[in-house]
Length: 366
Length: 149
Image 1 (cartoon, one colour):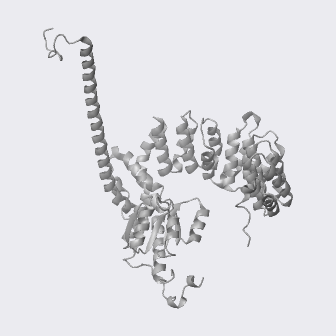
Image 2 (spheres, rainbow over the protein chains, first blue to last red; image 1 turned 135 degrees about the horizontal axis):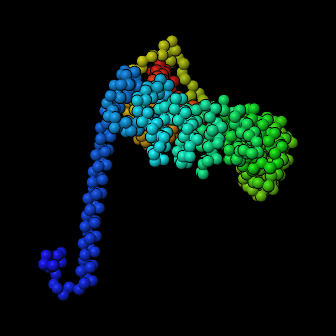
């Protein structure tokens, strides 16, 4: 009790609440001081890391050029990479991997090769972000020997982020044989972009087309029915591949399956627009009357590519009376594509409320 | 139209195109993608060319107003002014502008070439091949100096 305390210098009559207030203020002051010191320490540490990275990269860069120009063996650079700094080294190589191809890319892969076993271990387990980064590096610097690892990850109950990364890299390194596995994985994902998946399937090349066609027609049977999303991505990938045999498949599906999901219908119409033949127009025409607006849009666009003179009247009707302006615009574009100018001129001359839609479509007078 | 025609008598059509252009021919690398710029610069430097690298289209345009590089390599996504804008801004092939952009858009390549780009290199590229294409454009300009008029 006889020891000095922090507030001994205050008069004994100082009220208790004031003492409490001063104690709290002092505590905040001390905390602020500690926080400032920590922030400064982190800042200095970051600056030191940046400087170290700059130094390392400045030392690696000239040697990288020598290796890429075959003036030095890969070992000339690899020997300058500390084993604990392999992560920084691969990060340094990454932008170059998306820049070059051919022989130079082989040299770059040779530089990364000694570190890939550790990267593979990281891809197998650990925090999702770290696994994703490891998978990205396998895709960039690895080769077909890493495909089994990617397949194994896709068969695991891995987080979405990891599955998406493994799928993307399998698209890059895998073959058409991997399409079924990728399609099965899609249904495990909670959030996936249609274009992203389609581009993965597209990257597998033309050899993937037969498997994609079979998935599109749902050949696995009703017990394992493909989801509409899977069928849509298959149709999109086939469209990007410009797969001509998909034309008859899409036309048959449109003609015979009355309970098709509207998204699947729209994707089939997009596919027909790209790879269909004029005789497939018969399968498209009924969908100009679909109750779903986006199906009508794609039907009109497909007719622009596949249609004939007999489509002039139904397209003009869509242009004039469809309650959706996007359908009307698609019909106008289709007429222009078919070079059926008369309905467009009529609409323009009648001063129809939709005349503004076709302002840029009419050919300028000679 | 007559102004755009090249005076064929002023060209030495018998002169072979030189494989190695003048070592003094400088090249402006107006590229937003640094690794592409670094690799091209390294290849061109080793072949005796001076290079200037800028990462903004406005800087590139400003440079072209005061300097006359032998050729320009411009990125299609260059901030400030895109490579295609630079093609439109400089007189035809004076200097020749080679565009460098991502692979996958053939339509854009066709449009750029029709607009007057001397060549279009897609990324990923092989650095020696890309450097050779830039040097080829330089060689052509040196062999036919009045062709741009």
